Length: 52
Image 1 (cartoon, rainbow, N blue to C red):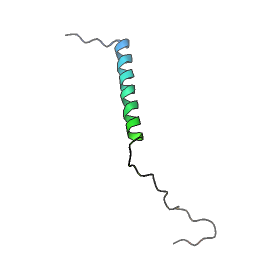
Image 2: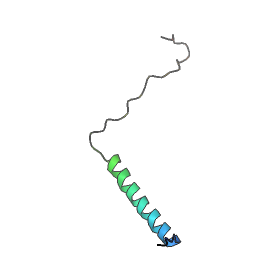
Image 3: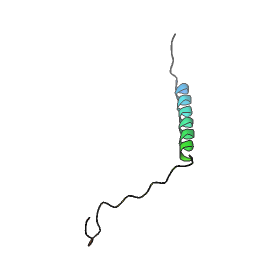
Image 4: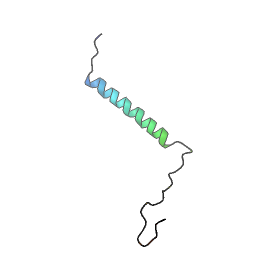
């Protein structure tokens, strides 16, 4: 059995992989119940403040 890898096949495969990635990205981005990222404490102290 000979397997041919044509440009048309590669383009179709790339298209469907792109579609799957888009759907998964939308599903993860629209997931309910995800908490927003909380801002961290600044690492560098501002000028004139004491460092803890």
